Length: 205
Length: 387
Image 1 (cartoon, rainbow over the protein chains, first blue to last red):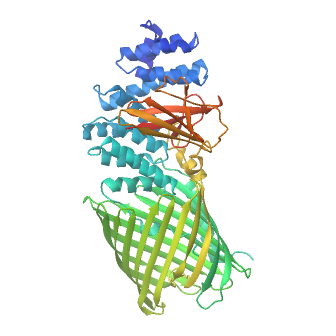
Image 2 (image 1 turned 90 degrees about the horizontal axis):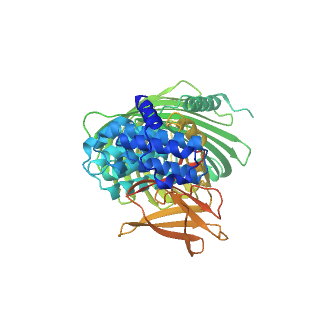
Image 3 (image 1 turned 60 degrees about the horizontal axis):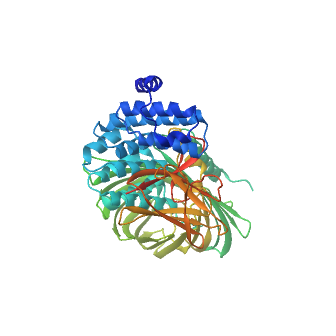
């Protein structure tokens, strides 16, 4: 709430510091409001490119100006929360991915833990986490799987893990099971458990 | 013919479980529903062969620490006679401190009825201790409970051990159990194999019943194959011979079946109500293909660029455009490289990206192959991770 207030106040008061020319695609009412939000984010040392892209997305989709402003403002808040969770040294791509993860429902504590256990960039692990949650994997299952892999797995392994989950879900596995099974392929397996709820062979009369 | 008492109670229990499943969705829960519709040729031991049609709805509620399944089966034989079965089974996992050990407590409650025979019901509880490795594991367990077929309940006890291993795409398992149901006793030794190749999954089992006192004996085996036609529809064929199950009351029989399994979406949507904030929503099996016949693949190239391939079933499409955060959301025209295939190669940095496509200047859509999310503007956007 404090951040929202600060962003809004700065947006209202701060003069635009050279409006991004790409924002010319916005109408004359929306453009200065988005530009002010971008300026305030810049002043707060948050990445501005995602905000510009969000505004451009709205313009391309012919969204109303107030919806574009609201979307940009919300993303700015998400970026702020993401930085709170990951720390001030976080790169812009990581912050963008973290904001998406938070928006998808990932807990801030998961992001903080991810930062603690992984030395490499968090961009792809966060992207995979977001993708899993958005695809229907329960949040704690997705978080547990990504955390179990993130310490050692390469980015390509994580993407392959994501594809394995998607494939199994498409073939009928419940998302949480598919996630556990795919994570097990990299770490410890959890298959052959759940004796009381085994699937019945289809078609047995 | 009205469903007789015990089976009706089982169905009622299944419906009650379904109601409970759908009512209070936990934020980290996953609920899936399927309905199998099929036809069978079956010959129960001691009966004439018969054709049968079946409908089997199933609901499965799942959390990382456990599952609950409610399942019913309605069989109508060519004689006009009907059989009803209902089952509610749950399993709860306990994770002790040791990394590779799991405890499991499970329970099963079911009933069945055929014609005017006595109704069966059973209630059993199982406890298992698992040791898990990367590609294999083993368990030891015990069972206790009761079963009845129209008279006083008989006690059920049992013990078993099992092991499994996974090699490449094949999972093998074997188990040995000794069961006591009243004055009936028997030992089952069963092995199973499962494999999956693309959309085809195969599952087979082979077993033998030995040292039996009133439970029958001999070799039994079953096999089934499922073929996914999409993310909602799966064809299945199955057949084989299964033994008498004195616990649930099923009679040994031979069968061949075929049918279709339909995946239901609404339970997962209900579960997702509290699982996600309004800015994003879960994709469920039935809506994972938002625009039939349009699919996008992103293929990272060695030089850092990404090859974008869009498959469009409508070969009459004259133009396909893509817009995303890597094009400043300016429409970028893909070029046709084959019948229904459109491509572009663009520099896309590693990370999470948002994009949409449109065909012949139509609405912006999310092709299959991407995760969908609400886009803040009342529409949807595709999300993809580029390594």
